[in-house]
Length: 155
Image 1 (cartoon, helix red, strand yellow):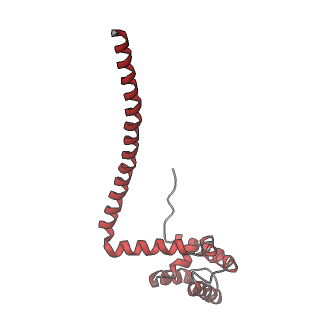
Image 2 (spheres, rainbow, N blue to C red):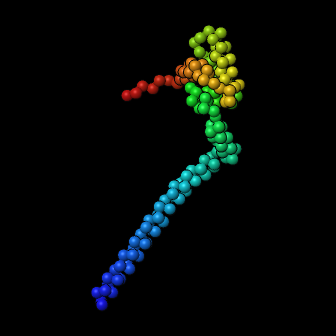
Image 3 (cartoon, rainbow, N blue to C red):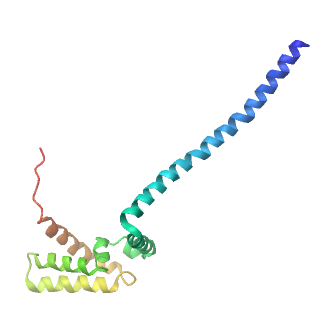
């Protein structure tokens, strides 16, 4: 009789452990994503504090715009250059770089007119036909912008 009480007790203990261990593991797994969410939330709050309400609105607007872009824009070479036309300061900087191109004045005017045309049609009227021009001017703008920085030798 004593032996069967011990076996019954062990069976009850085993059943209790089988029932509690998965429950405890589930609880730990449920808490883990909360830690991740908390860390992400902390980062968002830090960004909000740094940028302020207006800055966060700009970020949200930018992300909304990027999500809504047509596929022809999403895969366009140097697509950031097309987006740059949405801000006057970026347009001015781009035109300044074009002025520095080592090409004739006629070619500079062609590049300025071409990029202005892209900006005027951005984002809804961009086509694959624009890719060639964007590849050409994009690489030239990158090279021109790098002229302002000194080369740093790698040792």
